[in-house]
Length: 187
Image 1 (cartoon, rainbow, N blue to C red):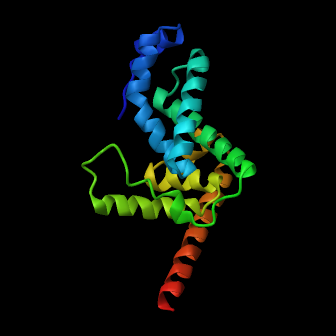
Image 2 (tube, rainbow, N blue to C red):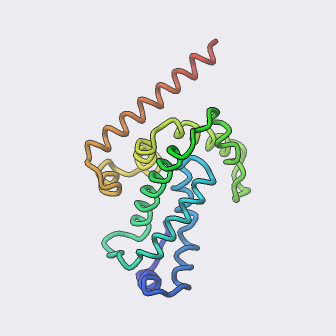
Image 3 (cartoon, helix red, strand yellow):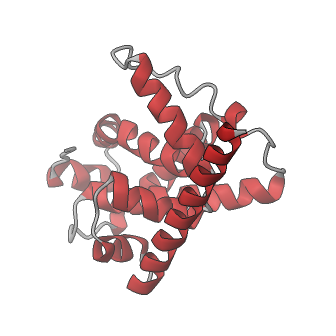
């Protein structure tokens, strides 16, 4: 897990650029991974990362040390990514071929990832793209990040029943997509 000392956070909050750069180096990969899972493509994820760190730079003084910095950043990243997806959707029509959205996912910085892992990641991203951003975030937090329903509600600042509903609908959508895929393959 990513650890950032309270001293570094306090120095960064008071304007120490080196301390902020240290936070960026330690957490930017984590923020990017979360943004990519929520947004669904690399360009949007990169934009979200920039927005998150700008917000962090301007608002780090608000951090109250009641939770870990990464938990706070996670919530900022998820909210920023959801808002970015909403703006992006309004700005342009979604491409009709979901596969083209993710053709570049395999081009990661980590060469140790095998072809199988890349294919699994592509399939996961294609499935997640079928969900609404709000559902996508909840299913990622539950199934990938292994958070409890209560932790998800607290992180997203939504009601517990809203979390349950979003996860239920996300699962129904994913099952429906799988059934349609199987029916298509049988033809």
